[in-house]
Length: 258
Image 1 (spheres, rainbow, N blue to C red):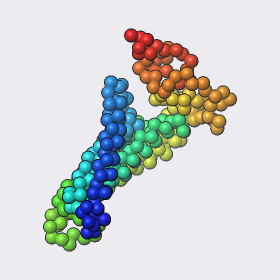
Image 2 (cartoon, rainbow, N blue to C red; image 1 turned 180 degrees about the horizontal axis):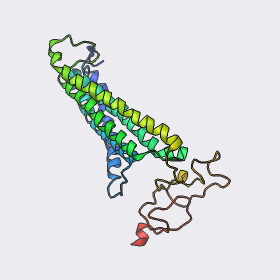
Image 3 (cartoon, one colour; image 1 turned 120 degrees about the horizontal axis):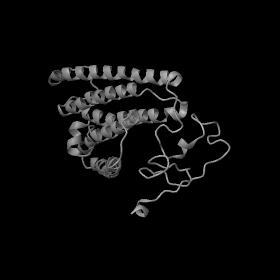
Image 4 (cartoon, rainbow, N blue to C red; image 1 turned 60 degrees about the horizontal axis):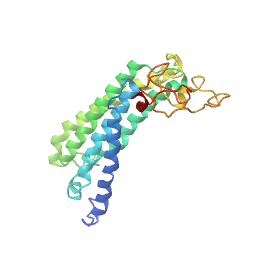
């Protein structure tokens, strides 16, 4: 609608909600970022894809500020700029979250661990490849490369062909890199290293099931009793620096320790 000759004053109705959504988005990004402050981060496939999700969400979201301005959006909206913005936020960021969840929940679902070396290779290919694909999209948009053109019939767009070739090669390599994930998924399902009941040392109830994978009734004949909130990390306990929700062990709070 922005490029269809719509009344410029009508575009303000779309501009205000677009700008307003940046407020909760910024807040949640700050929550994600500062939740890492002071933490003992474990670098594995699940955490890398989770961090990659935040990176994609921020990198793609920043370009949304430009698209929220009607005077700028009229020029950019029919170009590759909006394609790069939308796909980084709504497409790739969501896929990184799915990959992170897959690596995280796979041991609980199947009783076997996914291969960490292959997982990290998968992340590196996906992370670098994604930026090589969609960041040039923003450049093409600012250069005026119109979207939905099947051929570069406009003279000023012909010098941009090498950029499209670079994107194509990056996309092919990134797509081939997903075969690493497919192989890891299938191979680990049948021949992966057996997983413990709580491989990530999580405190939530799902990690206190009697077996991995859980039985059909989840917790067996006895339902767990909740003694703590799910955020008992970095506390002194008899087994480590965390306490399970279903553990009756009493631990001192920060205020009690002081």
